[in-house]
Amino acid sequence: MLLLDPEDYEDVMRLSERGKRLQVDSGGAENNLRVRISGPHAVAWTESTNRARQITLQRFLAAEAHGGRSIHHNDGNPFNNRRSNLTLTVRAIDQKFPIAWDKAEALRKERLTSIFADQTPLTA
Image (cartoon, rainbow, N blue to C red; front, side, top):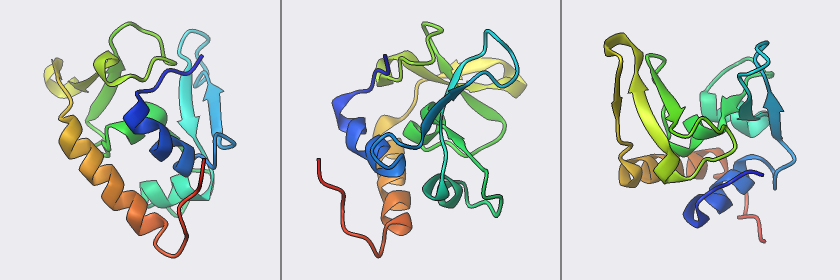
């Protein structure tokens, strides 16, 4: 079961076209499941020219684009994407930091506004 905080639900549904673009993959490793968002909106989010480009759900939620940082699931469950379960990890120094959720939410809203500038909001 995919777990999200209520304040993140609408953004995830919007970018994933009401869940149609959510998928689970293993990245080739059986014990390394990831929830990803695919499709044209994910490509726009990543600012990529690769039409197959995807973004992990936790990276989208944290509005994190830096390649040297990753988002860690504290309980090891890739389906638990509640804010309390996600931590920013800087691999180069092997340290974890709390995510600044106010900042992440503001960046996410800004990017979504840009992606959907010419579209009306989806309704529930």
